[in-house]
Length: 401
Figure 1 (cartoon, rainbow, N blue to C red):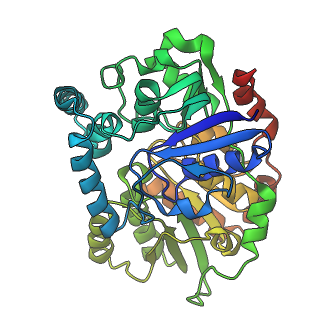
Figure 2: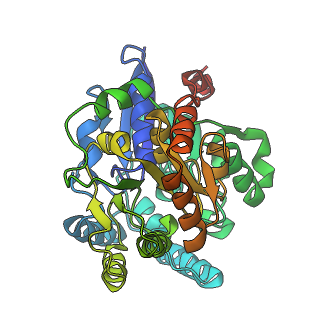
């Protein structure tokens, strides 16, 4: 009989963890595994890319982006619907109160963490039992899998610097005690997680994201990419428009490049809740033509191939799928010197690590614009970097034995 595996994730929007989960699913042989997926928010455009043998459990699902205006309206409806579904109103209100208090303590408001408990407790609980249940993202997916899924074995994935992302033990309510294995997607992610949960060191391992280089190369050859016929240096960043990604700092660096006379243009592929504030900053700096917010695109890989420099200057990171994609396509890469990024880029060998400041980004970008030979050398080295081992999947499947 086929083994039954359930994957649980917060959304199926076009983002790194979601893409990595789809790649993992593609590698699981249909003849051996019966695979299901449950999406906590019941929303996201990547549902159209689910492998044909994967069963979607959500009875109600929207294939709109969670970052679009329409998508944000559906999120609000999902929150209200989750409050009334399954009862447990006191538990839901208490969970929100705990999250709000923790965010006040950290002096950082994060709307997603305020509602993950409510969305988990107000979800569509699966009736069947699984051989293995996999919470593929922190927050809602992990809470849902821990509390509302029946499975012989359970595994949780951690994709971010846990403490920096704002999660705390009080918000989690010992949910990780219910998992047989916890996978950090890099050594730094594992280390950061164990700073919060040192008692789970014995069941926490590193499971690198699986990247299909051949598929990326094939998609990079498809039609698409830049259409503005710009003849200068093209900078590219791929990532959601969020505080974590530090586009506010990138805008300041672009202003310095422009004022210094560099003929460069910075393009961003992604959507998010900071679009309006970034557009205001963009306008105030006079960068409407120089810093282009192109939104999310279905196939970003032609852009990677056509850019001159890929820049990933984030405030914190887990393990960036975007950096791995840039490496697969041999881009010259600049990344901020922070957790996650420094594990993926070796400074001066296959990329540059920069200080996360306007001056720090400006200096690194300017140095590569001025030195074409260095750009090419770093890009060639990036293209040779290993991008994850499919044999690591045995760590997950071993739970079924």
